[in-house]
Length: 219
Image 1 (tube, helix red, strand yellow):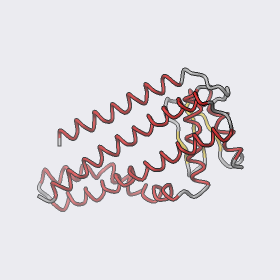
Image 2: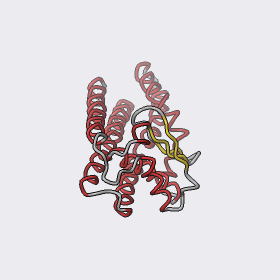
Image 3: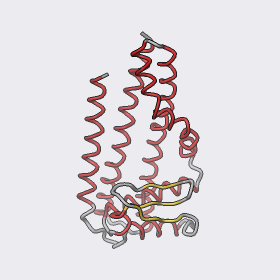
């Protein structure tokens, strides 16, 4: 189990370092269209008739950008919202990609929403129940932990196609609107791929833990 923990830490920290490095590079490069993240988001939303339906808010922090489906709000962090960088354009377009998924009733997004309540509980308590079950030799407790943690892992796995699809939509929208050049597109793709890698690393680590617990339960 210690080896899995070390491997998970290496994957997670490596992915986060790569994201920050890539984001740092392309956040210093101005995009050719001269659009801030807010401008980019508003342009794409307007194209799809969502300009009056989905709000855009500025939030504190770095890489804290997200789409809130319950309130239909695209939240952009300070450097993304107000700077006309390649990274800002890419991240803003990605978050709007989630808004487009929501508007189009994208199935994986609906599946993730359905999993969220039990996944939140499973992510918080599942691993601890499984570990205590192993320590105490309580197979029932271990199995409950596996089921709960399994829901959290399923949530992470469903998140992967959602994130990749949002990035695909982002690049397609920017090209269709003519607001991204070939050079900008390469940088935008690099930023989006780096962000996706963090989700892949987190999911891979969780899957390894889950498989470990399952193997221990079968002993």
